[in-house]
Length: 144
Image 1 (tube, rainbow, N blue to C red):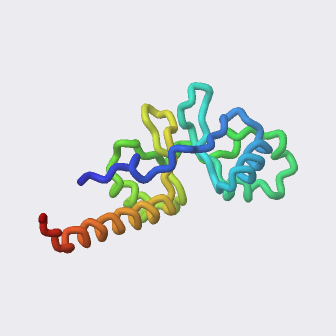
Image 2: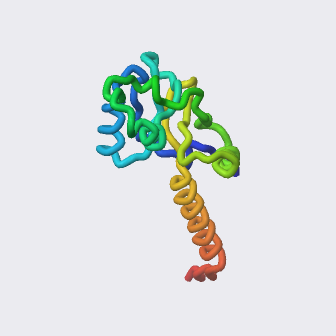
Image 3: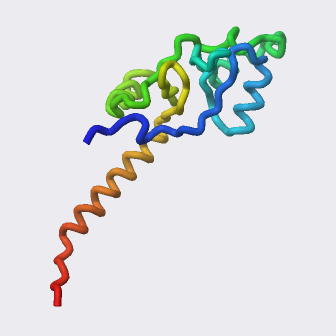
């Protein structure tokens, strides 16, 4: 079976426009209890990501409330396609220091996959396999 990114991703994703003010990012991160989000342009195409780490770098900059997200985001975001193989996403998590990867279809964000999503999905798959194996081991009930 080919496990695809779309099987494990979260499809409810919070994004922010590149033209938004940085203060909006603080509000979105806190309200949604997330640590980062994709940044999109007016066409809804992904143009970067902004994370708590990006915001920590702004701690001593008094001009941050006047800055736009595009001034502080990480451009050229690492992304995966929704129909991409899950093993490729796993390899990216193992080789890069990222917590989440935006999932795209035609450069538009359709979800996000995190390390937590992968752990949850692996657990679900393992439980399904165990259930199937146990079901096969059960003796068939004789028809009377």
